[in-house]
Length: 181
Image (cartoon, rainbow, N blue to C red; front, top):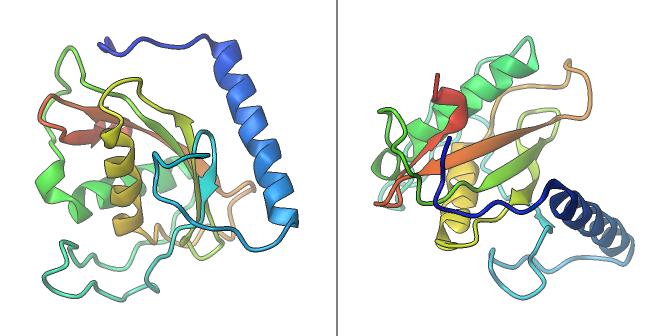
């Protein structure tokens, strides 16, 4: 899928992810971390814990969140990804689209979402940060947090994580790539 964003070489991306993972492992051993918003200094390749509401708890009215039904139990990782994409769209109706993705796209951030056994978010790692329209990264991370939890994954094989690609159009609305079929 074409994008007006220039792609980095795979080697650079892998090194950045490896360095970020190593930095995370070291930071985890050193004590409590300070959660920063995406885009702040020291942010590249980091992971961030994501606060989520307990299962079945609706967001307060007027805070921009949409109440979602309890997630269903998934039998495999394809079902987890599909349900997550559907929940992301349902939780963010004002900033998503469902039509075919436009050509070219404004930005394509990629996130890896690691879950706890109950489907709540453990952390979100940035796998691909767009070179332009960097604000789309923050939009994507917040959209994922609003859609959680994603259903019980405790019976699925570990690691309990999946990646999602966000296809942003010029109006900064997105569609999860999982729904682009």
